[in-house]
Length: 64
Image 1 (tube, rainbow, N blue to C red):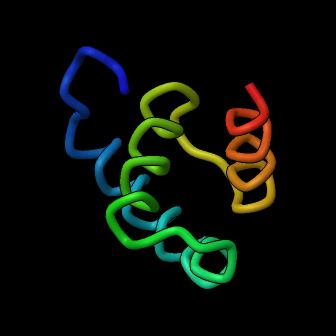
Image 2: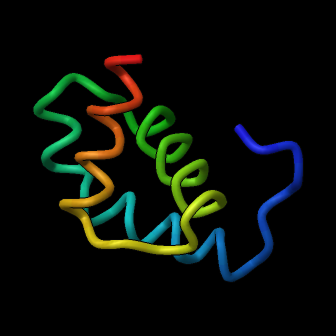
């Protein structure tokens, strides 16, 4: 996770991204807390993005 606290826009973007990706991520075994953490980290690093890019990023991060 980034050292800085996310601002309100980042939190909103993370919330929206998490909601859109939730069904897919739940099927992969993630719980709500993990989904929120991934989304918060992603939006802090990249701003916003679409669900496909977000899911691909999670896959890449897990392979590290």
